[in-house]
Image (cartoon, rainbow, N blue to C red; front, side, top):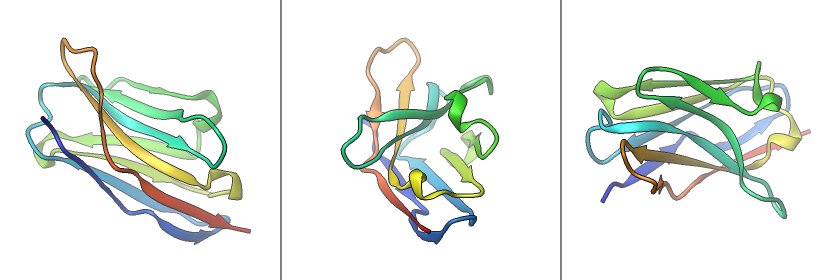
Amino acid sequence: QVQLVESGGGLVQAGGSLSLSCTASRSTLSFGFMGWYRQAPGKQRELVAVISSGGTISSAESMKGRFTISRDNSKRTVYLQINYLRPEDTAVYYCTARPMGSNTNYWGQGTQVTVSS
């Protein structure tokens, strides 16, 4: 079992920036990918970005440009930098990770990001 703990969410004004972190309870070297999803009130959870063990990034088209994902296996952590925040970015941001060879994702508890206009 793996625990993923997110941090860095909060309340920010539109136009501001946030940096989210997600740290795993064990080594992330065996994770095929790690990444971020978000869920806004009344909406389905959606992909923000994921990064593979080799550093390949996949992200939703609408997220490109303002969202930057990175990964540091030495710190067992995946990061999400969000710039030029908009009120529509308000959501719970969830960290996820999938071990290599597995079809099961681990999920964090989520961190709230609220953007005021």
